[in-house]
Amino acid sequence: MELIDYLRIAKRRLWVLILVPVLAGVGVAAAVILAPTHYRATVTVTPSALVGGNPGNQYSGSQAVSQYVSMFQSTAMGPKVAAAVSNKTGIKRGQLSAGLTVAQVGASSVMTVSYTGRDKRLVEPAAAAVSEATLNTMFASQVKLAEAGVASAKSHLVATNDAIAAWGRKNHVVDPDAAYQAQLNRINGLLQQQATLQANGDAAAAAALSGAIATARAGLTRYGPLLASYHTLTAEQTSAETALTAAQQSLQQVRSQLGAADPSQVIFTGGTHAVSRRSSLLTEVIPAIGAGVFLAVFLVAIIELAAQARRQHREADLEAAEAQARSVRLAGNTSTAYPSERPRGGRGPLVTKPVAKTRR
Image (cartoon, rainbow, N blue to C red):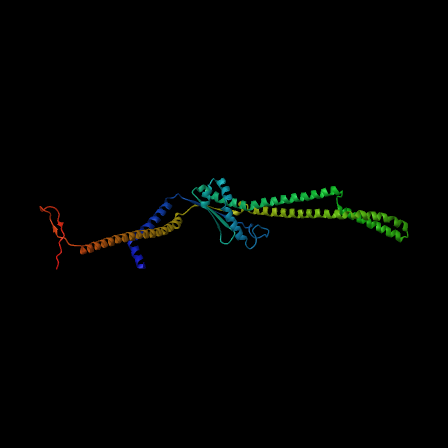
C-alpha cells in the first residue's frame, strides 16, 4: 500500500481516529477532577558536616557526594525505613512507597524528601519521619559496628593480659626484662670487682669471684627462651592495645557523625500544600490521549483487515458463481436439443422428446 491509500483509510475512518483519543482524554480528565484532593509536604536534609571535609568521614573524597546521594536514596526507599515510618505514622507501606519521592538538589549533597497523600495531617510527619529514619539507619548502624569493634578489641586485650599473667605464674617471673637486666648488671658488677682486685694484686680474692661470676652467667642463660616467649606475648599485647585505640577513635568519629546527623539540626520542613490538579491533568491526560491515538490506529487496522477479508470472501463467491454459470452455459451448448411437448390431455408440464437426426 502507498501513502495515498493510508490517507484514504484515515479519511474514511476519521471518526474512530478522533473519537477514541477524545474519549480517553475525557475519561482520564474526569477521573483526575473527581479524585480526592492530595496534599504534599517536602522536607530538606542538609548534611553539611556529614559529606566531605574531614578525611575520616564516612563519605569523603572525590566521590563523596555521589556515594552519599546513592546511599540516602536507596535507604529512604528501602524496607527498613518503610517499616519504621509505618509503625510511627500508621501509613501502610504500599501507600508510603507510592507517594514518596527522594531527589538531589542540583549537584550538591542536599536532599529533598517529598510525600504525597490524602490525609493532610500525616503528610508532613511522614516526610520528616522518612528523613529521620534514613539518617538514623545510615549513621546509627555505623555506631553499632564501631561499638562492636571496641568490644572485640577490649576482649582481645584482656586475653593477652591474661596470657602474660599466666606466663608469669608459670615461670615465676613478673618482669623477665627487668630480671634479665638485673642479672646482667650483677654479672657486670662482679666482673668490675674482679678486675679491681686483680689490679690491686689480690689474685686470691679475684679467683674467688670467678665462681660467683660463672653461677650468675649460668642463671642468665635461662632467660633466653623465657624472653623469646615473653616478647611474643607482649607483641600481641601491643597489637591489641593499638587495635583498641583505633577502634575507640573510630567509635568517637562515628558518634560525632551521628551527632552531626541530628534531625533537629539538618532537617527542615517546608509545610503542606494541596497538589495542583493542573499538573496532574498535564501529566496524565496527555499520555492518555497518546495511548488513545495508538488504540484508534489499532482499531482502524482491525476494521480495515476485517472489511478486506469480507470483500475478498464476496469476490471469491462471485467468481465461483460466474464460473458455475459459465460451466452451465457451456454444457447447454454441447447437449442434444429436445422439442418440448405437452402430455396427452394438454395438461401438465412440457415434456421433451428426442428428435431423430436425419441423414443427409
